[in-house]
Length: 342
Ligand code: NAD
Ligand code: ZN
Image (cartoon, rainbow, N blue to C red; front, side):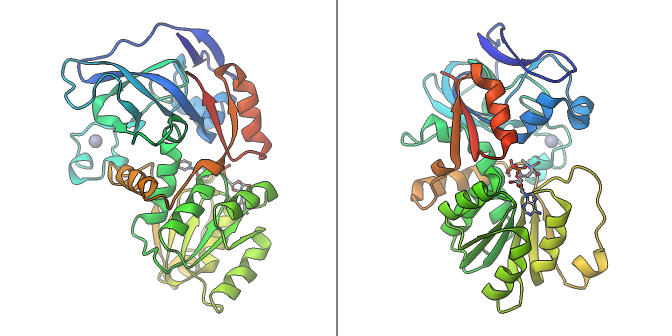
């Protein structure tokens, strides 16, 4: 089969012929139809410090995908050949303290597909049946293939927040930030202010329902105006850029919540006393998606018709166009970039 492979500890990907994966008794084989390309794939492509510290080539890349089940292992009961599915890409142990207390999204034994084992930028992928998520008949494989980053956005927007009626600032309108705009809207936020330095992405944020989509320098005025100077109830920090992190704590109201998804490239300084403690702010660190509360939310919001992620997808490529796909992400001109595989 065709697969996009990280062949060696150096920059680049290679599209090559590899054997179709063999499945274990508890796994299913999925024929991949669509897949999403993510910033993590760019890190692996460029072989930066994080990637070289974490990944062990050779392996097939890609962790966002959807497709059709073509084979099931002997112990699999609730997934059938022909099922239309996507999957949670974090494979957890199910046995540790965290897994057993409903916190498997932070299981210390997590293995990520396309990072720690073979991923979904291929014609087929083997997945444990426990990680499989069924798609409704009217959900396309294309939308199925972006459940993972949509899930990041749902997790950030809805975990521990009181979204109905809330005022929200979203710092960073990458694909996940733009999904979050639509989710906050569907969940009843009364005012959504989105910030980014990139005009193309601000346009997408407006398209998804942001009331204000502004440059970071203009976020202060937008928040003050929308909240009578108080600050927003909730900030979703979705950039990982230090200036935006400080702005998040500056513009959240006292007693508000800051949900942190963006990953700063290196350690950064925060004034705990003034930015968090004296403001009585609650901070939530987001890791992946909650298993499987977040997945249930994705499906139910899609069913409601109130949230439609499709406008976020701006670029589509075959696997052969992998270099163009990576370039589109790096250009900053793209919303969500996807592969059309089978
Ligand atoms: P992304 O990294 O492209 O989005 C970041 C956006 O922030 C860009 O559009 C950029 O222009 C914008 N930005 C830059 N400076 C800014 C500023 N000062 N104020 C506001 N916005 C600014 O794409 P993404 O895929 O949506 O990822 C968002 C972040 O989430 C990244 O940091 C990524 O590493 C992280 N992430 C975290 C998890 C997790 O589980 N915690 C999962 C996936 C991604
Ligand atoms: Zn575990």
